[in-house]
Structures are given as C-alpha cells and as structure tokens.
Length: 318
Ligand SMILES: *[C@@H]1O[C@H](CO)[C@@H](O)[C@H](O)[C@H]1NC(C)=O
Image 1 (spheres, rainbow, N blue to C red):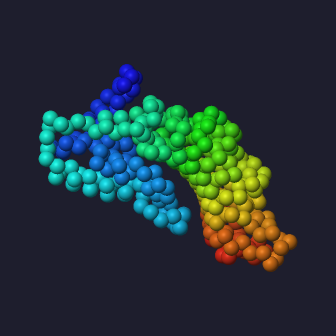
Image 2 (tube, rainbow, N blue to C red):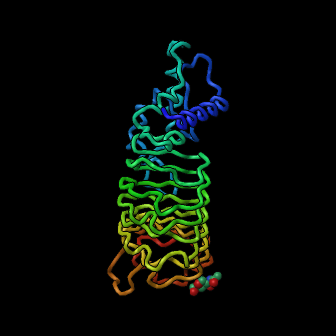
Image 3 (cartoon, protein in one colour):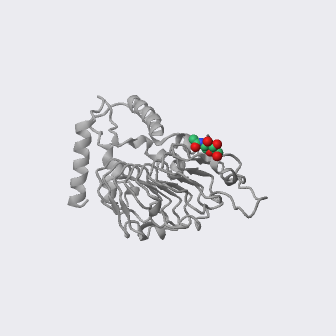
C-alpha cells in the first residue's frame, strides 16, 4: 500500500477509534460512515448493488417505490451482525480491524476515493465526508451517494466517461452551478437527486433521465430553458417544489407521472399547460399527480386546462 493511502487509512481508523467505542470482546470492529454500518460479516450480503436499486425513501412523494430506507436496512443488519459477533469466541490475538479487510477487498478499485468513501460493487458512498468537489470515481460506478457534503460546483469533467452511472444523489450540498456538459452526455443516468442545494438554473439533461429531484433550491423560471423537458421522453417524476418558479414548465413529456410544483410563485397558467387544446379526445392517463398547492394561483380560473387529466391538480380552487 502506498504511503498516502496508508495515511488516509490510519486517519480513518483513528477517527473511528475515537468516536466509536467497541464493545468488549467484539472481535469484529465495525466501519461507520454516515448512516452506513458495515462489518466483515455483512459485507458479502450488501455488496450486491441490486439491493440498493430502489432504496431511497421518498415518503409520499414516490409512492410506487417500495422498500426500506438504506439506513433502516443497515440498522437491521447491524443488529444481526452484532449478534453474530457476540456469539463468536473472542480471541484478541486474531482480532484485527476489519476496516483493513474491507478496504483491501476487490471493490477498492485502487482509487484513493475508495479510502475516503465506501466503494461496494458498483456503488460509491460518500455521505457526510466533507467533500468540496466530486471525487474521482471508479469507471464502474453506477450509483453515487455524496449527500450532505460541501460541494458547490459540478464541473464538466466530473463524471466524464462514467457510462454506467445510473444514479447521482447530491442532496444537501451547496451546489449553485452545474456545467452544461457535466451530465448531458451520461448515457445511463436515470435518477438525478439534488434537493437542498442552491441551484438557480437547471443544467442540460440526458434523455435517459427518469427522476429529477430539485426540491428546495432557488430555481427561477428563467433558469429552465424553453422546452427543457420536451426531449426527455423517459422522465416520470419531476420534483420542483420549494423553489422560486413563476410558471409551469412547458411542454411536459407524455411519460410524466408526477409533477410537484408546490410552494413556488406560480400565479397563472397557460390553457395548454397539461393538455393539447386541439385534441379533445386525448387523455393523459399517466399524469395523475400534479401539485400546485402553496402557489398564489386560483386554479378555478383555468377550467379548460385540466380536461385531459385523470385527476385535478392539488391546490386552491376558490
Ligand atoms: C377564483 O376564481 C373563481 C372563478 O373565476 C372566482 O369565482 C373566485 O372568486 C376566485 N377566487 C379568488 C379568491 O380570486
């Protein structure tokens, strides 16, 4: 192991030793990183990235996505593994910090990133790691979690060549700018999760995108390109709540199922915001979840805007 790598490892181990007292007789030390708790004996189970495919808990926002949140999943496993560890005969001479085992595992990919973050299969977990930039990522990365860091800018080259990247979750950073080339060329990107940042504008997006979550930013309507969503024919969930938008973006792709615009500054809408005014027989069955509550708009003023929808938007009808 090279010296810098060894040093970061030592720092990591010292931090863990300082914050995490291990139980007496536990020959299995445990690596903590943010919410994740990993130990040698659950390593094999959690390495399967398919386990993480749909784990994010959107609560009522994404009702069709079922599954435990990652935190509760690891919590369960933590309990199980502690139990397993207790039943093992304690033998201090063979005890060694499993952080070593974990980091020396094949998923290390040889990148320093995997010493600061946890690289498991095709997932990279960098939550709460004080990052100011996107770290260099293994070519095989499909899922990136870098929540609650201090990243302020996504640069054009940050995800370059990551053709397998499916999900980017950068919730709770301070991102105010994303270079236009940073995401547009990612062929596999499905989920772009950016709530609680400082964005005033949306970057160009790849056509593979299915979920775009930009809640709780500072998005203005001028920061959304005209027809920004037209070509996104796979987009199903568009979460733009708690921003500064004063218009409903148009046109919306037919694939859209949820449009969340609550708590913005929308006062009015076009007659064809949702429905094609020329085609009265047409219904838009997919789009059944439109939220406009928390906007200064009287939805009763636009009776001809909803005829194609399976359900009226939520909001003020007065
Ligand atoms: C909302 O619009 C409806 C329909 O035109 C109207 O009757 C109602 O008075 C309006 N309410 C407010 C608070 O402006």
